[in-house]
Image (cartoon, rainbow, N blue to C red; front, top):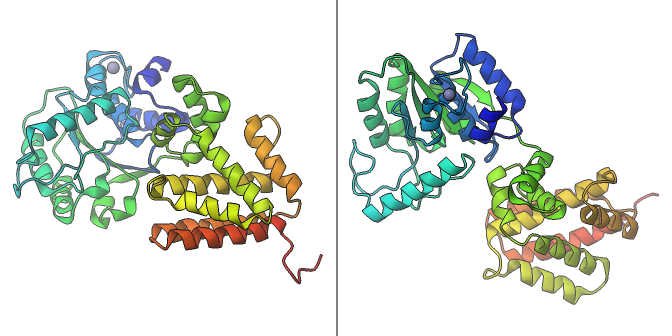
Length: 379
Ligand SMILES: [Zn+2]
């Protein structure tokens, strides 16, 4: 089993895997399943594991990761596997999802798939791939009713299934209503609510739990050779998304911790110029993008959460030092209100409000909450 987990690179989902194995061995494995959960928790990796388990030559109800069938699934080239994902719209073809897509684009798509093969947590990044259209489902329909290799189970994996447009979803529904024999559908999605009720009611639904930041931290240390501080910052900023955490690990993340420190320092004094400089820095569209600003704010939330919880000793020293420092400098810090203010700003930034105004307002509010003593408050 350890070998299989290494091959499929699934981390931190032992209980979930045990549940699937029990279900696979029970003989009551349904023909359609939705695997939902946050981005980067391992839905695609699990779907691949399930697909391989249904076809493994050496194990029953699980995947060995070593036999020829498992290897073919791991390489996304098993003849019984249909992998569906969003593609750029280059033609109005109703039957061929690849119609009109240029050779250079095909090459790029193949490169993306190769990355997915190397690491199933990789998020495919295909330019202009905004939806899964009826052509993809029509093509699937053409293939799945053909005779199957006896003894094998055909598996259709639809990645980010919520990207199916209405026509595609309706076409899939028709297939699910009269499913071909020996065929299993696995739909992965972060947004199961965006799938039509009619599809959801035909599938059994499985929620894939979040990965803890500690699991992600350990993975970064093991696979990336990150040091504790770097690993912890990346893990925490990723908000449970393993792929994002690995992406952050490529960047210099002590940078963000420095920014947090600079921000808190400027809030600790009456130095309005330095607050203003921090706002200018964070709202600079050349230096930051929406994602990096959200990262910064997420990290700030985590910091205040730890201040409120007084995290135990033994966590990353640098982080603990920062938490302790806030505790010491601001003994009356109202972390709850600080977190509320940051969350409000995060929401506002998603609605494209005026950046500088929103951040300035936030910093002045934080300054107040750090001190905690609101005028008129009875102590
Ligand atoms: Zn196998």
